[in-house]
Image (cartoon, rainbow, N blue to C red; front, side):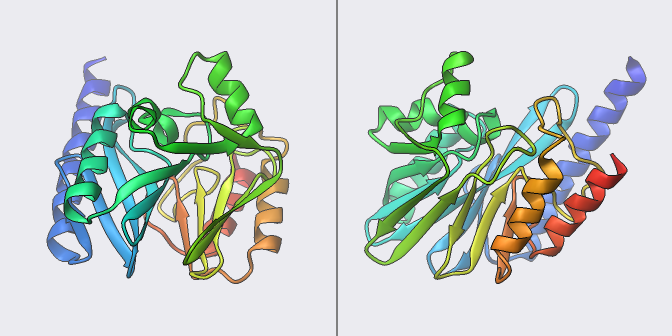
Length: 250
């Protein structure tokens, strides 16, 4: 037990050092708080990353997307919990002069919808696939307001978000979000970062359909400039190929 605690402590120390190094070296990274960061990847699009300490894993980062248009903002996935989500919401309002009006939830885990209650209290409209809504009801979680079966297109004055459910993988309900104008694909936890050595949490994974879903992803999105995983650094289609390889070795 002492050895496990030492390992977790070491992972946490490494995580904090990593946070310090990336913020010191990358001028595109904004430190919102000790546990919330924004990385600008285009003029009005950011990756939001929040950190939460998990007993078995240490200090874990989780990614989401933030899109700013005029005086409103769209969020893909919330930070880990209501407290961190409130911090991000207030920062966007006070420093980026935009109010988050829409949130897209990519699956029912805490790293995607842990702050949904906070956003609902502020009148934010939430979207998810039908399975995510069912799982939220089953697990007595805040329930996203609007759901879809296979796909949904959200049109804003200057951009379009395309939401797709392509099949089970990391979870049975995971969806991806495509911004065609920007060629940005938010794949979430369905796809692993290049430094990932395994599939991570597969307690609720659909391992039978996982490789099929990833092949669909590769076939459908062959023109991606930026692909964002649920955890870790963004990349391109090589992240999908890496995840397929991890599945083969699982």
